[in-house]
Length: 467
View 1 (cartoon, rainbow, N blue to C red):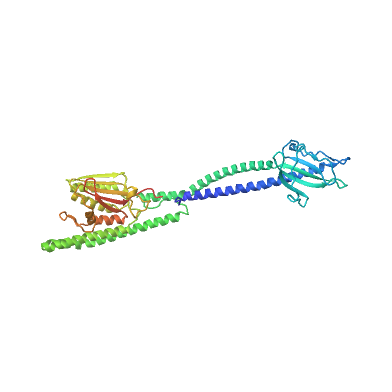
View 2: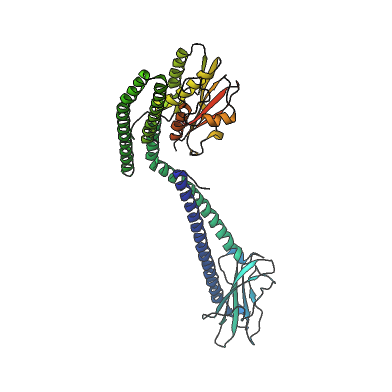
């Protein structure tokens, strides 16, 4: 799953890295401490081994004598795993000396092949004593007198001491690293949030632009973001200049064509009826075509502009008010929900599309027309729409005769008039379709709940969720 939030990405990366690093560091320190503890344990046994050697002699009767005092009470307590043993070697025979902790028990001794002596004629190995203790043994052989009489000396220590020491250290270490890790993550999170705060300011400034509350990215941005803000402002200024230039050119073209078309219409009135009607109809068609293409050129020039915004309720109220004056016998209802609904269109484009639909509805309605504007649901998004865009559904419904599916297809064709008895050029619905499609919206026709025609427009809306 792709993470879209920059903050979440950085936090996830730092969390994963910190966790892996702390785990590796914890294992490394624990391993090093274990090796150090084992080495210290072995050095202790070696020191105790030579303490025993220095405390043992051969007496006048030829027997081993001595009472090693190793300064550790565990050598005097039974079954502790801490023992020392001095045994005669070779032809020299006498009773061995053992620590009180060993008593009459025996320490298993591996062969020299299994545990060979090192260059100092010492060897170290682990065995299990009669009490089940796992013990580390330090062993060597020494000559005790000038007659060549020798003895084997062994000192053992309980390995559990090392394990307990390492376990206690590791537990404290992991707790300390965990506390340090949690603290580091909190500090990192605060640092990241603080460092990315200017991006939130930039996003808020962009939201104000999309909401029509501002025309530029305004704010005190850091050096890293300031070039981006300047480029965005330059792009907005360039977009505004293009729109204004396109509007001026469209206005000039409309003005230059308006007079010749008006002359043709006036001349058509003085011609013979058959010829005059032909010239008039063609001039009106030409007038509608020119207006349509001028609209398309103007819309294309400012398409996707973040500055295009029209509050739906006041604009639709004006249209309904005009339609009520022109059609006093028809009831017009207006529903806008929520009241602050806004459309990402130029006001004149919104009024032209909805005005055409209202005119058609009033022309065929028996007694009532309803205009509604609501937030569109997920199931009515345009085919070309981004999943992040906000959409508005405008619907114009009347109680007239309505249209059948095949008639709906014909009605959407440019210049088609299904009822020649009604005034009009047949361009209204096609103009609505073209304008809405230029804004990536669409027009849908169907039969409404009153039995008449229901024209539904799906248009881009304004949302503050631009993250």
